[in-house]
Amino acid sequence: MVGILKRRGGAVLATALLAAGTIAGPTAAVAAPVPSSPTILPTQVVINHNVTFGGGVPVGGWYSLSVFPSGSFNYSGHMHDSGAPSYNLAGVCVVRFNNGTAFVFQTAGRMHGTFESGSRDYNWNSNGTNQSIRDAWQASGGGWNASCNSKVNADIGALVNSTIQGVGYVAQVIAVVG
Image (tube, rainbow, N blue to C red):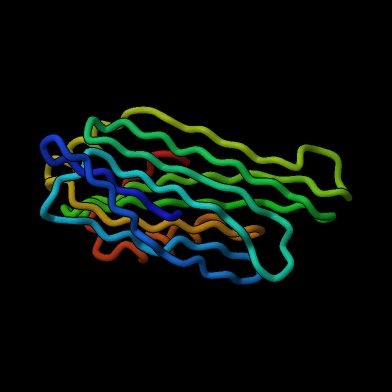
């Protein structure tokens, strides 16, 4: 499941599942951009994604990003290295509201394999409130687009830039978690 957008509508709560594929490369897992709906204002942006890597990379896990009209957010996840070599993870989610303001949520960490001492797991949980999210949500009427990418042994800066390009026109970029 890549994304769920909860929408309000009187006594009925409709849930739309937005499906997207994962691009499997030797070191990449990508969640495709998630389109927004201009007719029904969302009560939250929720992106959930299971991550697997192709090319024999023994790393997998999940991440979740929730963003709310109040400006509050939660970006969390878990990755596990089940192989012999160690890996560095770079993970990025970008949420762009229809007013052109994009918010970057990113994480980076190391998972140790059999050949190196240390934890095989990398976990993160970042939450808070950002006034700029609330302002952008209101200015755009809640319309949004999102893109998320994960890579191992990659440059986080390049991953952030390519993920920002995946959400379309951006007038302003605000780093929220970094």
